[in-house]
Image 1 (cartoon, helix red, strand yellow):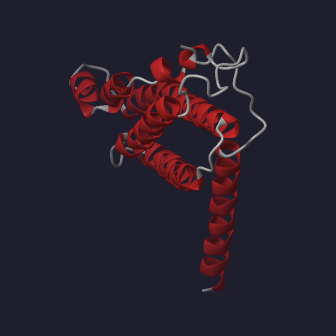
Image 2 (image 1 turned 180 degrees about the vertical axis):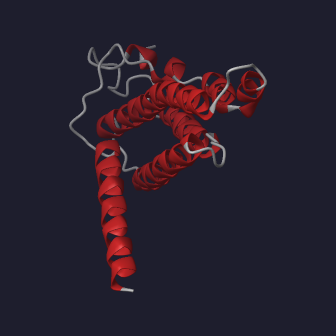
Length: 190
């Protein structure tokens, strides 16, 4: 009984540590937005919906009908797909951070207080971090041959933040607002 409790406790600590690392990276303020960043065009939901096909079982079923298909070939196939999927996940993570950095930059340059937007950002960071952790668990299970992977939650988080960015950048840039500075991302320059 104590072995089970100890194992569960260690698993919980590891999971908490992983969540802390992901969340800390998401909300880090030390990242600087560069004028080359273009968060309006950087995120394309269609690009990420297409990768859902990457982990679709259709390709694997067609391959399994071929002679010479074995459990080792299946493992290698799934492992390669998971590695490619991780690259797309990094891009999604970077898009989310780019959008959030731009919103923070605009918030720092705006004259009004935007506690509602800051609260929404914290909520979306939390949901996105949980979604990333759930995605990693699903990828592990997928690699073992169980379950499937869904990107919907993560894409919705990025879409929500992108919508907030579009709304806030429109509101934050009235003529003569002082936001038309040389260090402002080109996306927002009139």
